[in-house]
Length: 194
Length: 149
Image 1 (cartoon, rainbow over the protein chains, first blue to last red):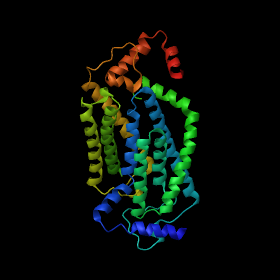
Image 2: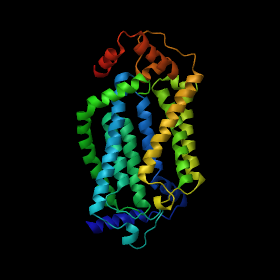
Image 3: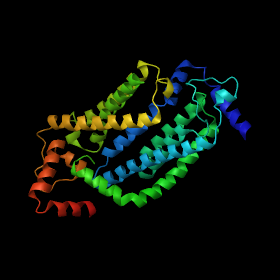
Image 4: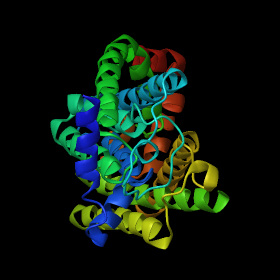
């Protein structure tokens, strides 16, 4: 299993260094900024795009739920990192093409994949079209991290599993907290901001 | 780190101004549009967001670890929230000036962003205030009923 993981990593990472333009694009996508900012901006857009009061309420509760899922997935990864450490591919393998800085935290699970997939999974439950776009962005983000040499494929899979479990939990939590969320949004409506 | 944080704030601030314009045109919130025609506001908003992202990445190398001058995830989250709040505030104030003539004369105000279909943000806020706190018989009871109903 570990060998297959390393072999898949080596195959994907071997694509790096062949086409400078692709490397630049993957370096951008793999960075800590572009995909998280785009996902965050998509949540900002969701706040406004509802066509009537009911749809807006559904989307705005969805934004709160996605932010909760993001926070919880980060927390789970943080706890996991406290007990488990896996060296990064560039520390554990030879001939790795690195298009990124050298992170010092655990390679497994991928925090970036967990966060991106958690947001995408919540939004998928609310709006399939936007959710599908977010899943695509999260998948490219995960792939770019392997391409850039900072994660093994199994790290990304670990992040995805954490995201899906956290999402299931967060959706339950949302149902419990819905009355409080509705009051908070109605309060914001008095100021014409929700 | 400070320069990087400022750049990140500007990225999110400018990009979210563009995103709000695009989203407001999709949601039909004419009172939030800086450009009257939604069909122009939509691509213009996307162009602003794309330009902000391009500026951020083309200006310098952004693959920097947090201990080498980059931003950790907590700082990113905080700056993102502050930048979006600032751009939302600026959008509301600026479009209120631009769309001052838009007003909703119906007695019962359309609650929330829905009011911005027919009036600017400032007038919607003033309309809400007048309706709930001046014209309503007992504003505490009415607001309680509204919030919990």
